[in-house]
Image (tube, rainbow, N blue to C red; front, side):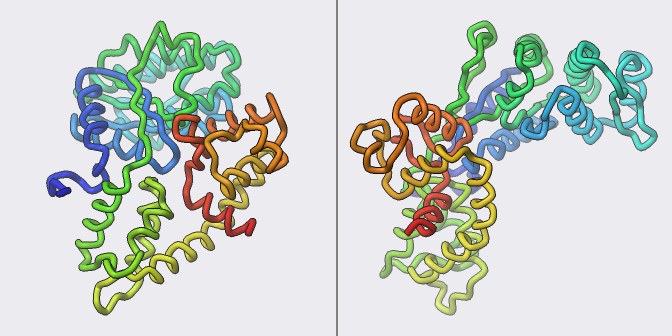
Length: 360
């Protein structure tokens, strides 16, 4: 298997998905891209947007704790990507009921807007994206990371319904909703305003091995073929490009007199990385309900594609029925485990390794 050297290394194994995203954006399309954290969702979209000459705006919807905060994040990203004179002109002519032009060239919403006014301001901002694109004579791509998170405060689905309607009619703006695989739909407007969905599954071992070899080759390094170094690396990352990148970066900091990466070096890189990530993983567990932590630990110690089986429940002391299914769904929505199609595998391999070490 040979690598086309014209292919950027971050797109290895994702060239078909990348090409489809380019086609969608070039045709004024919108899409939902799903995968686990670290699977390269935003990297692909940013690269595709660059390919079609579009301006990229991004919002992390986890930071949008309510409608007011969402508008703040949207105005911030617009201010970072549009000229101050254009913003001032727009406020004077269209947006002065809800927005002001800050002397530093930033767009700000007025304080003390009620819920109806916030929603009206939101609609105006979405229209501004179209005006912005036409004014710049470029496409605008709005990436909404963890988009389904807004449902935690958009109880009546008003904001999401408005988004989906605008997605359907705007001709110069493409919307890319980023979510976990478990969050593909679950919305009544899915049939009225369907989005093309692109799923990023784990990479195959041969693809990831090729990618790692090419990355290391650039710096005159390679896995020692007389050892299990490459196999240990592949077993640790389980097709997850984010974790693979983290280990490769750690390996690149070591010294190799002969340029050969040994099994011991890979083990050292993994151990060091787990130590550095331990605080992050501990914090993550503290944010999860106890039943989800228990299930996650069980799947790390004893992977299975049938966690609902009577034998598995008894073996690990899990709760039966709705509680177990709720835990499975919760972990899938957070991007921590895959769905039944991938055998409920833990989606972050280094987290699984850390859990096994912690529990052994």
